[in-house]
Length: 183
Image (cartoon, rainbow, N blue to C red; front, top):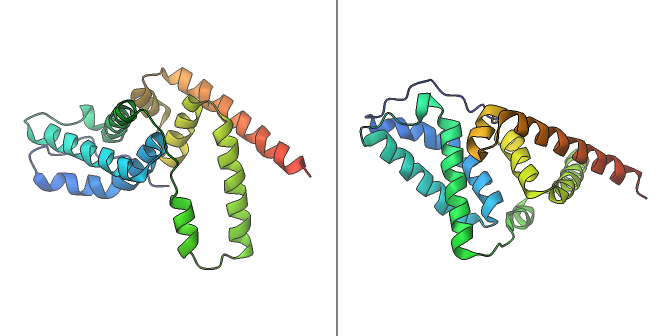
């Protein structure tokens, strides 16, 4: 996983300052937005709007994200934009990128097959969690955000984030153990 910590200050007037941020955050934001919207194309639009908002913040004389908390700021803006898209369209679709990737992938090794099976079981267990817990797990483990950053993104308290993540992880473990025992 990529570490999402940046220097405390990014020069707002430098046009090139946003390019490294795009390089670093585009993939994680795209995965996150896709998990919220359920659609890769809508996710791309959301991420593009997020970077436009960052550019405006950095060039309009503002000092950019508060105290250099760029990861939390980007994920918060991305989340709000993705939820706005869902509210406007009022429908969810399934992201089919895994099917596309599987169609063009070379033959997997036995280890890769085992990892894919475990990942599939984990995704099934994750899908059984409440939406809020799914979102927190994605922010923590797919995007490597701290509890404080997750709290900023979701509007929850840090202790509530910790409790919900602990509960989610317990449920995920129990789901995997149960699947192992099943014939």
